Length: 497
Image 1 (cartoon, rainbow, N blue to C red):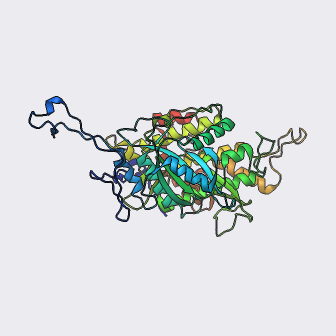
Image 2 (cartoon, one colour):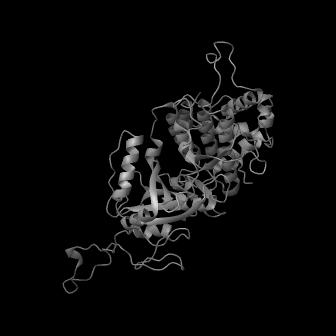
Image 3 (cartoon, rainbow, N blue to C red):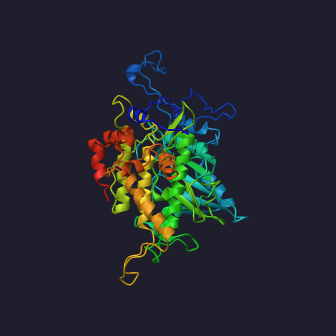
């Protein structure tokens, strides 16, 4: 199991490998040796002036002045050279026509950087997959101007490689294939987007894309309904409805299973690939109901009480290590991500987590180090930030008995002793996850959260409760150093219960 020391968290290891941009020589683009060559669809141009042309060499460009135009297709090889990505860039309209001839397409979700669609085989409706459509752009040159929440090509390549790395780990989505497309959004997809926004948003206006827009289409297995939809509307069969719809909420056992499903998945990711999700809001947690109880000892370390299965999706902002030298991480160059403020408590808390996470990753590493390189460091405390957000959200939606529901008598929190025990454990745990609490942060990773629950943590929380300050030693000192930073404290104060 991969653990990180306090010194590593403060100094940060410096990963210098830059896998994301693959430059190719002029002429036809090539991928790996097994991929066929194809002509570059964008020709290189040269810039010249009258003063650069001699009388007897009017057609020769001065090499000291000529500058080749940056070709975004040099960057796209970071995607097309991957073994799990089709090496051919296809026309979006033609590919869309092909999809329509075989699949019934339905839009199921929309994130900040991508749309999600369900592709159901027309001849066999029970066979279907989920596709994620991401508009992508080069880091510089034509098409690089920020618009419509597009993802950098290098970050899209990191997400594809992260999907391939994480798919073998229980609790992570099954990745199948990826395809690069080019062209404006086809009318068919534009109508799907418009209809979806009419049902889910006040703004149903169409988004325009340039004629040479690049796209990444990722195929994955169906991971179920996302937690945000479950909390608002429940499953398609009407179960798991909460108070905002028909008066029903999550039971404490459902809350327990969802939270520990997420936490154990993160812990497995940390141990296997030094994984940080970095964007674990309810829309990126999927839930399915299995036919049998999900609490088998062979599947989970922590006891389960329901048939809920948890899958983590969308690794756009995630960090993962392929091996000792290659690290996948988003460059986090979209400043808008850290400048948003929500209209309700849950959204406001989510946007605060982004800023707190940034402070932990960027500070206090060397100022001379590139910010993009800093995001490659392994700082698993970011997973703890998101666990706090998810657990508090789940507890806010959990069903319980109030004095009013009991005829005004003495409050009875839960139906039986077991439920009261689970509720007490989660209520205490959330206080140890929140930044800036008087006990100071107790965990540095999701692995430590699981280990403490299983009684494996070297310095358990009981040491704090019993007043054994020496037992906590360096752990307490380290957290004190972290929360001294003024920028962090400013965001932490916004998160107080």
